[in-house]
Length: 516
Ligand SMILES: Cc1ncc(COP(=O)(O)O)c(C=O)c1O
Image 1 (spheres, rainbow, N blue to C red):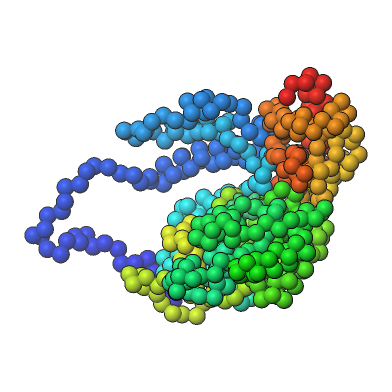
Image 2: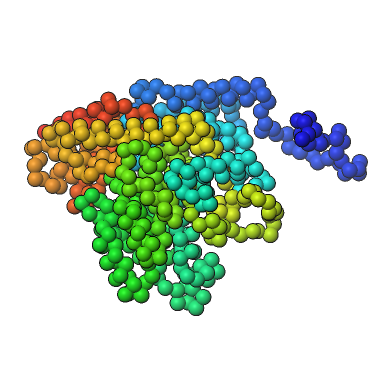
């Protein structure tokens, strides 16, 4: 082992020119770099901005109260011809970007599935940018590649996946699922799709079919579209009263498809649907997939990590036997946005779909050395795993188990508040941390369309008044409900109480005024 001094590299000789006959070029005078004191001064100001963005949650609204025009006027300034002082830039960020942002980390941000970002993850992103690693080739980013490999190993362990399974980070659940769909298609088509495309070697490729519940996220439909399999390749299977995929309908649809000349290749089970957080009957779906020789994928973008929480439905654990899982550390591991993972049980399958071994890149075979560019369609890729690796080390599996359990119990509390409040009605069974409910003032009893409009008006007013941001849930009968998703380590019981009472008060106020 060399000491640090000898490991630093040779450095430049005073005169690096091979001969005096080549004059040095005449270069434009320009410098982009900062010295240490600039880093300390500007870095300090950015840290102040970060602290302001990450504290004083009750002092701000979940979303800004500003029109598109106002936001345009305050943010846009045209491409500057000359550079400007960095202090003035930070003043602008403080004055405009901070107050005009939406805050997923607000204790009453309940819309979509966007979590509060753990502080260590926020700073992890800063370190990742400072290191500016590209974990695509081992040679370019050895430590970052090892961090990503270890983080994937931890995720496998948390979800019960075997050691030999492989995985890759990507930007979000959408991409993580699409990356899995490529592997599913390539492994299951029965011909070399990478070479011949969907038409097959003889132009007679069989239509392939994949089955999800009709509550599934649209990413599966987008996947088959972008893969050239056609929208019909995804079949939306009806759900039962619990919003879970109906097994009888699934089997019936597969049989119909086979009779029509198509080939079922995969079943997708939801480990938490986007609308009501429903966990599909994973053990039963797995059994059907095994019986028919199909691939079983779990879309766990939202709920996969829920398996850590003691009160999550036990059927979630069966995802350990799936062929692939998509999961999102930027949802329920509270990583800052931009961290999802695809896990594939079969070793080598990711590389079989994505590997290229480009002629102009050097590859070295060495046990344990992995070029992650061979496992996805990203070549240059950010060091996404660092923030997740740091957060898992900072809080540990047990810490996460407790925090996820807190979120689930808060959702159960909101559910109980709704049940106990006349004028509020539960609109879906709850499996994890999403609650669907409706505001139904007695004065609007039986007025279906007006009640639907009222739900949307309540969602709008909750946001408008800066109380909370929630989203809408389409219900199986075509009506609309309010929907809150709790994937937030800042949310407290008081926030649930305020959400339930404010939704009722606003609903009654609007109903009385007839103003919606
Ligand atoms: C079940 C499910 N799958 C996929 C996605 C897409 O994830 P992302 O928004 O991170 O791309 C979501 C997002 O809410 C989801 O709930």
